[in-house]
Image (cartoon, rainbow, N blue to C red; front, side, top):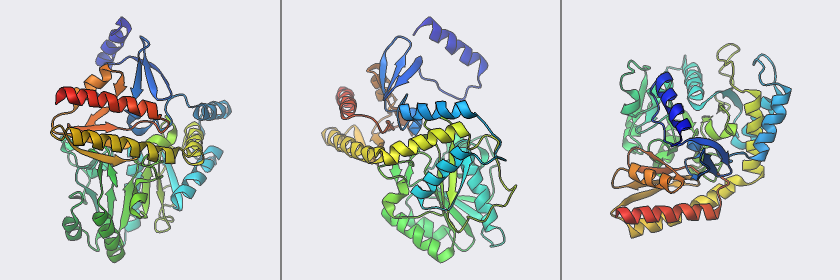
Length: 397
């Protein structure tokens, strides 16, 4: 490490609450699918800013949108109608088939808004209980944390919100036993990200829809990580033929700038009244302009379909590696460019070795190698990752 990096590291330790385990990298810029450190070393980024950098780094469409909007104005109060918000809302409503939208700053903030929307919708109907799934992750603010079923995030922060329960992931019997006429809604990631790239089963999704027909609760889809084209479809739930009542998005939609949103169908479209909810910075015009550029590239530029095809190629390669090394690779999971390899041992050593080789991935849930590359990643770049993983796996095996 350079002396400059050590200086920055010392100041980080001195000035910041110790909430992050920082990587020992001194990144100074990004280009395409690569990050570049102060010494000029290039790293192929399959970490992807945790699903934020869908178009990679320095995408000209995003940079142009940011520059042009920043020259007009950086911020207006949400008392004003703003063209960038309208343009992005129109694109998202069309892509989702939903009716109304609210822009926030982040995924967790959008989840908080959804909890308020659901509570107000259920008031007077006797519907009070929200359910989320085991192994879930919905954010770190108090409402989102209540929905999150991961002890390492929840411990020490009690008491959390009342009238929130958890149902075993893909446990249809537990689902049938939990929901009833008092159920307000079920919140779920159709593909769990932080939990280890686990997918909802077809049986569970079908049962959830049938129970909604019977009891009239809300299905609330958290698409913060899996949405905006990452799985080869615009939303992860589209792989199941489900139409949720409320959908939460964030991460990729801002093109690298902070932006989140929730969308609702006709059941909840008239729930909020003036003054019920608000935000100072949510729907920032520069972030929304970047979001319009993202939508144009993902949908009009067909990067969503490219993400699906590239993901299928990577999945095939990973399944081949599992066949070679079943004692090391327990399972391969994912859709599109939201991929996970579960190992039979902790995965951090693999992450560290790949970093030494100039490839960045993430380990979640201790044993799952998670990969969230940009949609622009090339076949040659994918081949490089596959070859490097095979080399590391064989050395471990």
